[in-house]
Length: 252
Image 1 (tube, rainbow, N blue to C red):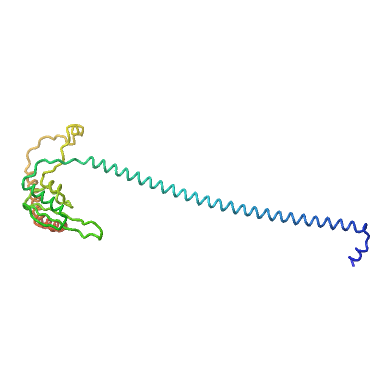
Image 2: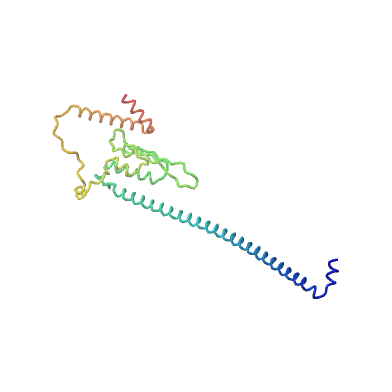
């Protein structure tokens, strides 16, 4: 009905309706275009925000990586500095250690003992012998496959022989044997060093009358010392704990 009525209108009568329809179409197209532009802008903002978040996350990850790398480098540098300081302290400490000198030449028998010890050490095989009362032993350790052979060397002084006790330290060496024989001793300080060092001796005390207690204590001390040495020499194979037990029983 409405189409027929519209068709019945003249061109002049149709004009206002056609103009209105054209205006509505233009408005519709503009609204669709605006909505599309708004949607596109929103998608672009969303994509930009996502890209920014990704970039920030990557930057944080890289920053953490660099911080960890720097921390590791600092720890390594600190460890190297500590090691260097420790090495320097050890070197200084080693330098403070008094040098040893030969206070006398070895006797003919001592020279033969030292030669036998040196020969035994260089042979690198199980060995056991007695040279002028000195008992020499070299025992091979059980080594892992592919590892170099290692040996334990022991030297026992003759029974009744007074030594400085250096042979108690293991592994025994030619130097320890020389120390035990009394051939090696710390070098005396130089005159300049002695003058530079403060006098550590206690102040002089007033002379006291002789006491009978001091000689008795000294006698008891040397008696116990000789007894302990005799027990140790009589039981060269005994473990330290066994020797201590034997010595305690001897003085009960």
